[in-house]
Length: 58
Image (cartoon, rainbow, N blue to C red; front, side):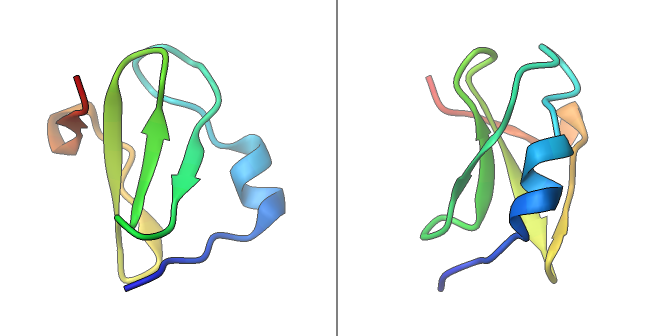
């Protein structure tokens, strides 16, 4: 399953915990913050930017 996010949206999204930029992991269907070590799910094309919903990637 690959996930797409418009480039303009990805440019304005930030990690709610660290405020750092997010990168798209298309294969996993997640937005990843390397600074905080969290991956946020994308459900039905909508990023779920809640720290409680994120999983640790460390």
